[in-house]
Image (cartoon, rainbow, N blue to C red):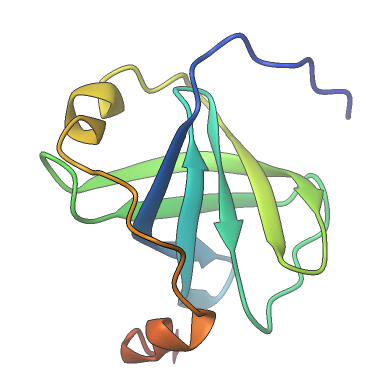
Length: 116
């Protein structure tokens, strides 16, 4: 799968995101870099190959959102995903979020893994 570079503005953020895929109900991740086309997610104990289809559940913007996406890159710290459809409606919610100093992934422990 070839992904062209995006021309959209990227927003550094600290945002909790739930990843839904397959038979797993969700994994908790921390969104770090958001654009209208995708997001980079810090994840722990999760391996998703490039091309994996997932649903992302966002909380903390103007309204909660659930968005279909595809994994386009994976490294030791997380995954980069591309939204199935650009999400310009996320931009107004980003104006309310100022990126606090980076937090440790350990701070995400309040978000438990739920398996169906």
